[in-house]
Length: 111
Length: 111
Image 1 (cartoon, each protein chain N blue to C red):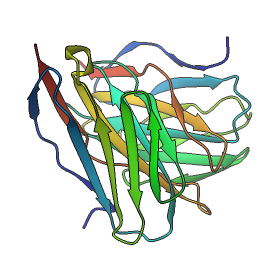
Image 2 (tube, each protein chain N blue to C red):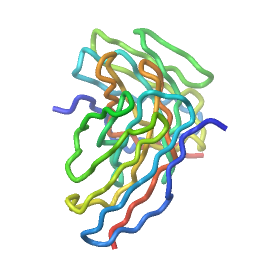
Image 3 (tube, rainbow over the protein chains, first blue to last red):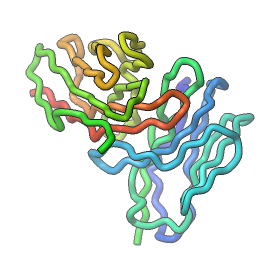
Image 4 (tube, rainbow over the protein chains, first blue to last red):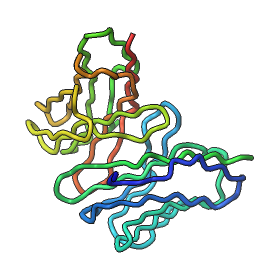
């Protein structure tokens, strides 16, 4: 079993839709959670970072962490064609420094 | 400007040849990481280092080697023992307990 599971998609939505991206994990030691966006042939760029259960909002993006269920989500409101990319979740524990990524979900937002 | 620089952007390797990918950061980050990404896949951890002169194997370390002689540098050598090296290689750095930042990647192709 992989430490981090993420549905690879692809996910296709119309412009303006609310998008929900999800990851589950098995290691209860994970404390730090990140979401990245990656365009083709580019390095991932950080979207959200959080270390506590609950919601964190930044513009059209909301990151949600549920440590009791070992489940994290990223919500994108009012999705735009420019949001079309691969979204990667990542997480780390507080001791080893190991940083593990999910498989990535490919999102297409259609005009 | 602060950031992470990977070089070269494109690299071609002949069969049986060792090649070294460069990663330099001026963010004063303690931890550095190397990932491999295959088409349509997520990021798989090759090696990581939390401090100078120390590093740990990730999930796919076989056929790769690293060094961490300076805080700002973490070069990756792809050895001839790596039988399928064609991939996109990404370097990241972070201060432990915070978010990670990425370089723009090196695309390695076997010719």
